[in-house]
Image (cartoon, rainbow, N blue to C red; front, side, top):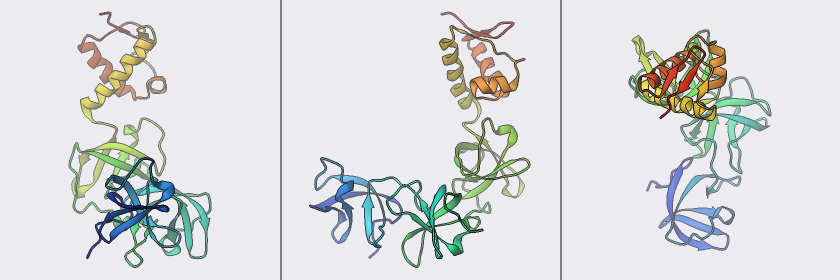
Amino acid sequence: MDSKIKVGEFNTLKIARGFEFGMYLGEDKDVVLLPKRFVPPGVKVGDELKVFVYHDSEDRLIATTQRPFGVVGDIVNLQVVSVTKQGAFMDWGLMKDLFVAKSQQLMGMRVGGQYLVKIYLDEMTGRVAATEKIERFLSNDYLTVKEQDPVDLVVYRRTDIGYVVIINNQHTGVLHHNDIFHEIQVGDKLKGYIKNIRENNLIDVGSGKMGYQRVEDEAGKIMRLLQENNGYLPYHDKSDPEEIYSFFGMSKKTFKMTTGNLYKNKKIIFTQTGIKLVEE
């Protein structure tokens, strides 16, 4: 019978029985041990706990209330803590490090290095492992997204036109330089949206939220900054883009669109030298 307990994932399980050394979670014989050091204070038999399940250093299935940096299916940027002839071990936030076999490395790994890896469940061993060879997990043949969808992005590699990004751990797309409003690097996780799907399922993405939803977020920031600076800020549509970005953390285009929206809503007025809060 297939276990209801999923290895390499978070599981919400009921406490079946308690012992001095910990608690067993699950039902009937389909249970996993939560060692005493991870048992939250005050819990009792019958309570439900959200735990992560994996194999410990002695290859026993174990539960923990610690949160790993990624679960099975995630693509994450992790640091190597040790290297052996068989492979490398990466820190993923748990007591046991995550193994990357030598055959799953691209050009070898070094201690202290940061590498983008996919976390997967090894079919032979049933254990959680990682691989640098993530291309085989990515495909744009059949898309699960459409234009304007909000998505999770992982920065994959830099190109001449911007950055190739991984979309929802499944597809690839391009975040163009003119859609980047702050410094990013490979491995960064971003929130974004599908901007355009071109011929052959080539995807362009934007960062943050799209359209007026984003403008409303930025409007709140501008209003707050005005209130914190006695109702006046010396920035306008002729200001240098770098100055606007340095102060507001947004592009000049977004600044102009947002202040235009605030002006239409009679929240601000434009002066010769900046923007000013409308007194209510």
